[in-house]
Amino acid sequence: MRKPIIAGNWKMNNTANEGVALINALKPLVAYADCDVAVCVPAIDIPAAAEALKGSNIALGAQNVHFAEKGAFTGEISANMLKEYGVKYVIIGHSERRQYFGETDETVNKRTLAALNAGLIPIVCIGESLEERETGKTEAVLDKQITEGMKGIDDISKIVIAYEPVWAIGTGKTATSEQANETIGYIRKKLAEVFCPNCAAKVRIQYGGSMNAGNCKDLMAMEEIDGGLIGGASLKPNDFAAIVNYNK
Ligand code: 13P
Image 1 (cartoon, helix red, strand yellow):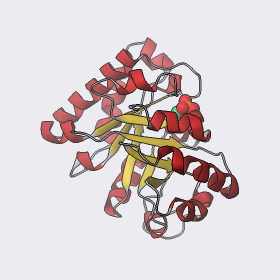
Image 2 (image 1 turned 180 degrees about the vertical axis):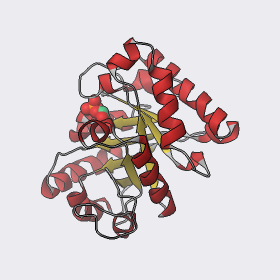
Image 3 (image 1 turned 30 degrees about the vertical axis):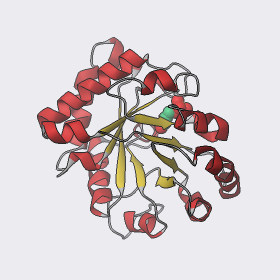
């Protein structure tokens, strides 16, 4: 049985003080969640968020990690720096990083291996653009993101995958639950082929892209969907809590 995981991706929103206020509002609303809950916050919010999350059932996540242990990488943050604050999850290869910051499957792979090595749980993002979907390239794109981005992972069940079709992110245009289920089913089939069927059956695969309080029940009812990576709706405590409590 895969335990669902609902994670908020705050992206570049919330100063540390705003983040603490959001966390304090959220804590009582999600205290009885049946799923794993996390908030992935901007790096500079991490110390304050870690303090505010103490004693709660909400885990702390980061939005990126560098692959080197340490050294001359101005502006970057290592896995150990995150670990010291109790960070548990780290988003890797979000489409915004691929689109605006030159992230490639190769760097996604290096970051993922470094995160695993340090005992963090990577949330590796994959997904196709609208043009790729419309020209029938979805499976080929996902194949490459899996074979290259996840190369060399010993136990694939140690990562979380977020399937985020780029055309559904921040657009209000959600994939239908059938579309998301079918594509996530394809991802699991590919993982079984590249890694092993047993491990593929254990990997938690989230859906991400305009998931909200209104559509979360339908999405979460699908067999292949094991959670959500939530952008916009994670910035509002009531909306995020409604998603976390999708089964109540
Ligand atoms: P939205 O929920 O705002 O569409 O963002 C999804 C996302 O990119 C989560 O990582």
